[in-house]
Image 1 (cartoon, rainbow, N blue to C red):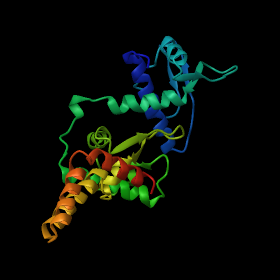
Image 2 (image 1 turned 180 degrees about the vertical axis):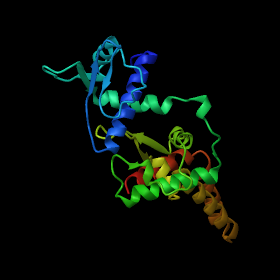
Image 3 (image 1 turned 60 degrees about the vertical axis):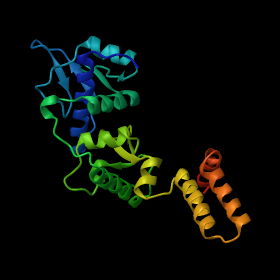
Length: 242
């Protein structure tokens, strides 16, 4: 992954913000860089006039990196360009990773709050048929709405993942397999094997026959000790095959 300058990072993020504003208005425009006596600017819907215009070299470098593409603009004014799929994905990553200390707020990472957010995500994901691209963040039925910090933490704990669509400016969220198992209380292979070992021990305690009791305790030891990894592997394969 190429190292971007601050100006290039700003350009990608601002393009994403402009694109998002276009979508709110039902528009979709490419970007045109123009130079005037006053210095120049970007001509496109959604671009804030207070944002600095990028340099032509920055645009060319991003094209060379495969993050932007030139768009044919015969006879038109300025240089026309747009995102590539990789560029839009990189812009979303940059936007998520950018942390402004003046805008950071405390978040609640307690287990009850995190589990409630995860369950809301899985509920929304189930409701629309578990789509490949996940669900928009607005689909999460939680109040107050989750912060970016809380969502990033779900992803960092590998309970959810951000999914980028080439036709959407906003990222969507999808629960991971681990997140679904946790939210829906699926048994883990290790827990099932441990429960089996405990069941052998309890049965041994109430079995009057000495030989049977000895065998039950041997089975409990085998499952709970040196044979545990083997048993967990077998259960894992069986669960994956369901």
